[in-house]
Image (cartoon, rainbow, N blue to C red; front, side, top):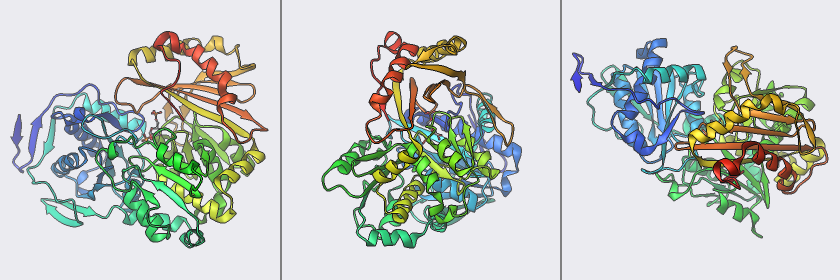
Length: 550
Ligand code: G16
């Protein structure tokens, strides 16, 4: 039932959906779930109610955009009407509704907005039968912290009405300004703030010289949101050859692909980088542009190594010339970063999985660069991970050192040793059975403290808990970790970004001081065997092998 209030605002009665608790990064569900009546509206109204409890919205700006997946534009039009009805002073909508997650963070920070709603399910596929998501970013440009997402969730459980206005769809195809009642709605250029920021961080002149010297790269935009920005920066600004960016046009179904920049889903790029006439450098970004994949000729740079190398060479990049305050990684991420941090004499923080946990460290100036095993790297220039930033870091390292990615990796492993690392994902498990498997392992932790695996004694067996050194906020159940005497680790946790069933992630790391190039698999085999036995993957789920290994 919808009532028209005296001021023309429409108020529609609703009832709660019980499943609107945000996961690792916002609320992700099947597209059809979001398309059912009131589902999107309930969640967005809950976000607005929580925001309004903290600040009068009339003086605030809301940024809106998405990664272009199916349902992006209709959802944006709905949210514009709701944001007007909820009394925002200003709404900034990205042209064509296309905004990457890092660009969203940049715009929030530059325009001093209250925050933004980012419509994306990240690297998950798009389409009416695929995935959709909504993420709320706060004033610092980063994902809402757990305390805020919990308040939003609690609000979704009691919501009984949402607000909207009668308004025709806005033309998002060109930059424009509209006054609707007390709200100014502006359609803005999604590249401007973000590109200007990157230009301040990097030496574009040096990167132009690299391409002028004949350097060749291939960037796979995976038909997702980074395409236009990558063409602009790499081809138009830095002079990379036309056609350097492939699959550049954002499509609602990502061209039928899975916009996840890893060895499995970016296989066309991987094949190209393994071919005889491969370019010097390859990279890809995901659906919303915050993840990155880094490749050299016949060489994959794992996310943990990429993070460690960027930190090792950070002083070669103008923005980090004066050194780093500290660094951070999520707990399951390889400890390669810790060794570089120790050599630089800076702190290395270990946080739960989720970019939101880096926010207060960055805000407090404790951390300059951070990253995760899930192909995310970023710095204090934003409060989100940033795929193109990572690509420009690597181009800067290559330009400054003259090393190929393979040589840079070799030099790194010689200096620091190597963390052989893999993540094994067991997807589409029954959610209750997966939770039970992890619970059963948790119960066994005290006994495991005295066990041995792969010939090494266990030195730590716990369920990761975190306390922010800045705010004191705590977070529990970050993953079960079993650390061995030689520094090897097995970590087990359930993904918080899936939309159906459960994905069990098994992270394996084995450190070798004399580690060198080569496949990590044989080095990790004893840990993999132990992990299978610990979780009884065959007995419980009939699984012999992971669905995806990265
Ligand atoms: C999100 C978060 C990341 C996290 C990743 C995987 O990335 O922002 O911090 O590492 O999910 O989370 P999980 O292991 O719980 O699935 P994105 O790129 O999907 O937004």
